[in-house]
Image (cartoon, rainbow over all chains, first blue to last red; front, side, top):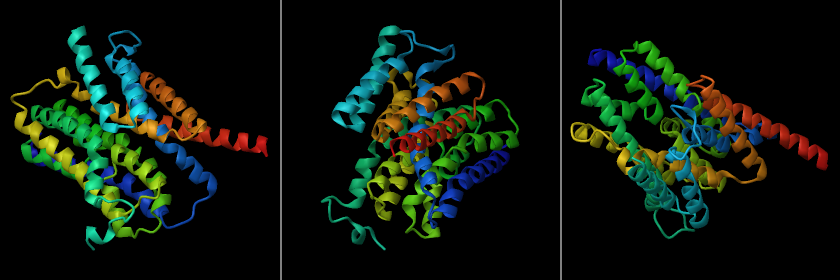
Length: 108
Length: 240
């Protein structure tokens, strides 16, 4: 594919990414929403974060993987504990990355 | 309007310092993933300019990584755009979830804010806005710093694409899952929220394994939040 076609594809990607990001904010921010809608929207952050996170932890190319080789899953435990106990975002991320790096070093 | 006049009096630090401190986990997540994207884009036949333009114009981590894979596989432009649409449709829900907090903002501000709404900036703002922290200067500071980290990581990846082929030995590919764990923990405000999180995660995994590769996140989120609403309505009816 030539670079001009790639650029036009990127512009298309930009449009289809921006519209869903902007539409609800522009359409809903200035009006009062029913209580049920606000409560439903209040569940969206936990739901979407968990829906993105859990498959990346428990599923590998083999499907659901609870074996010792699934480093992503086991590294989540110290990451969770460090974040819970210290309330430190950076600490949690450094712990997670460190555990994955060590796990690969010893399992490889 | 400049930043100094908007600085909050409750905190000693300036809004930009505060924005940087809050964005630090996102920076740690974005630089390595942006780096990986830069390396992959280069290997998929995108020019340097197009690689950077995608990070500037689209600014969507997972969609960009999927897109370079599709470019490398020789997919049609329309298929790449359609896939991007489905992958990023979840932002519709995030945008809707933040809308109630930004009633005082005008359309122009909202239009700019939407442009940099990603999974990570959303998770950060959802926590901030719930605490009443909607100061535009700090909010836009966070977004601009986050995208700078993304574009910066992309540029580094481009520059290093001939040197580095594997980011796995240092665990850089775990930066985003680790950040999601931290952000999720901060959002578990009640037992109902915990239940919704468990349902969403399990459902998303099942749907993905069932073959719903692009829309499992969206479907699981909608179903889990709706179940949460139903459970809330049921328990509050019983207790009243």
